[in-house]
Amino acid sequence: MWQRQKGGAINAALLAVVGSIAALEFGALPLFAHLNSTAAAVFVIVLAATAPLHYGLMHETVHGHLFGVEKVDRAIGRILGVLLGLPWETMRFGHLAHHSQNRHSFDRPEALQPGQSRIAAYCIYYFKLIVGHALSYALIPLATLLPVTTTRSVLSRLDSNPESAPLRAAALRTFTNMKRRNAIRFDLAAIAVLFGAALWLWGAAWPVFVCCIAARWSVLSLLDNAPHYGMPLDSGLDARNTALSPFMRILVMNGNYHGTHHHAPQLRWHELPSAFARSGARPEGSWFVALLRQFRGPMRLEKA
Image (tube, rainbow, N blue to C red):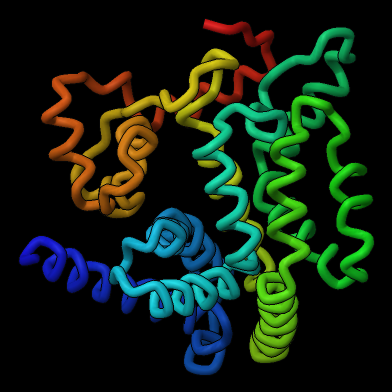
């Protein structure tokens, strides 16, 4: 119980940090300060660097670990999602599908398909790596603005691979659920209003706000597949655990222990280091190296 209370206090403090940064991003900063180009660049870098922390808190809400109360975690998760421009229900579905069907057809962007043009594969891959993963989570929810009867057709157009049939079936159940569908629609409206207000508040300096969003989406895209890059098609629950300094581990909310998280998703983020230590395993290199390794590009993937 003490550990849970301690974790809740830490999460509350981190939420305060993320909320303060978001307030500056969405209009408080230009109201109180005039930024020169250097200050604007520094602010964009700060927004990019804190994107993993923002997402990490939302990730805890997806698993119900932030405060352990479903309604509270869901509400906070939705707010965090709106502030990222990424509806929570869509992010939740994508992440839980990643857990249940690791390395499904959408979950192995580096995989070269038989007969696929290398030029096309490289263009698509690097676009996804640099910004496309997050962009897809921003755009796909727009399909909920269409009539619910179009959902099956939209899913088939996104991926008609027979291997993806279980994933499409799960998506159909999720996104034809009117409660979830309306939640996504509400969040999209909130994103439109909030982003519109931010652009107005930034005024002539609006490109700074746009750069903040783009930088955050880019960082999240880079992190999306890093612990799995190059792993076998049938790697199941396996993912890489990597080494990172204590401060950086807080900034990414122990996301470097991704393999431990996959094997024990019931653990809260602050419980992952001790669980990894008990396993007796060793880190598979540096977190930064795992991040940069992805720039090798697409490759042929085999089963283990």
